[in-house]
Amino acid sequence: MANKSLSSQLYEKLVNEEDARACETMGTEACKEAPGNFIKMLLSLFLSKLGDALINPKITLPWVMQTIGAPAYLLGWLVPIRESGSLLPQLAIASVIRRMPVRKWVWVVGSILQAMAVLGIALVAWRLEGSLAGWLVIGLLVIFSLARGLNSVASKDVLGKTIPKSQRGSLNGWSASGAGLITLAMGAALALGFSENSDVGMYVLGFVGAAILWGLAAIVYAGVEEQAGEVDGGRNGLLQAFKRLSLMQTDVRFRHFVLTRSLLLCSALSAPFIVVMAQQNIGASIGIMALFLMASGAASLFSGPFWGRFADTSSRRVMISSGLMAALVGLLVVACESLAQPWLASLWLLPGLYFVLSVAHQGVRLGRKTYVVNMAEGNQRTDYVSISNTIIGVVLLLVGGVGSLTPIIGLSGVILILSVMGVAGSWMAVRLPEVE
Image 1 (cartoon, rainbow, N blue to C red):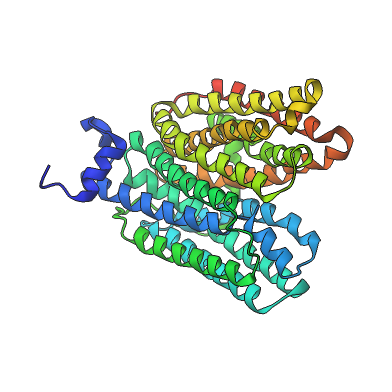
Image 2 (cartoon, rainbow, N blue to C red; image 1 turned 60 degrees about the vertical axis):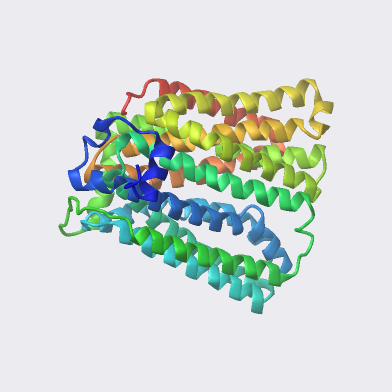
């Protein structure tokens, strides 16, 4: 034990891996570097998630936009651009990545671009106001989101090449737990009143700090020891990439997974409607918002490692159970709204249900991430990740439009539709084959 490096000791404590066959699908050199790579990737993911917490499109960016006098109609684009912008171009990204034997540098470039975009937003907030400032923030957010697409495709590829199959869920679980700790701390800070200062300088410093974190993440990730893998050169890479969409027709298992993942979007899409319901029934104070931040952070902190280990055993079962959990939360909210409306004014009911929903969402995310990485090897994994993310980007925009039904069916009606989606997604997951 004395001869083991600190990273090796920490690695053993985090993954508790004693099975000598854990690396049987990896080369000897890759297996040898697994402990160090695990810690480096964990640290880089933690740093990037901390940066995400500082530039939250649901909280921080709207506040900044309002502070600098940006048009109110731009606020509705923040979350869709942040989420879908990183998913839609992934077929094109994958067509380039397929030609690279070593792909960690794509992640490094993506992290640096995110840092530069955030620095740009900080500069805009510091020097400009009004419509021009708002549109510049939107443009920089597009760059930021596209850069996240680079990280998304590359990270799963590098993960599959450098981390043993039985430990990939644990890596994602521990990084989610670290991000949850930060979110919990931010919620506590809001509850204690540290957020009352709305001076632009405070936001500028936060964005500069986030940019530094992404820069540090790039430096750490550059140290990952990645062995050269298979490449697929050829001409007309982008055309070939779009032709790979035919996998949705020819690959039954992959098509089934994408449909399942689409239905399980309910865990993410339900959250804003529950928050709005709380604002209407409890109040719109910062203290109430802090409760939801703390609920989200605590859910990630405590459930991340659990879901990660569970996913290493069966990512399919994780999707089943977490999807049902998300659906149950929605159905309980609808039942309360219909049968016991006064309960919704309770200070703890909706934040408590939001905590359970956040636990479920962590399970959905970790389950589907682990499943798609374990479904294939090499360039086929790249295809699976890029095609599924591109399709989900479109689905996210389409299903996200269910919110437009709110004036007709109300918040509870929208939540009910999303809950039915969750039940259907869990049923679809039952029919998926195991991949672990």
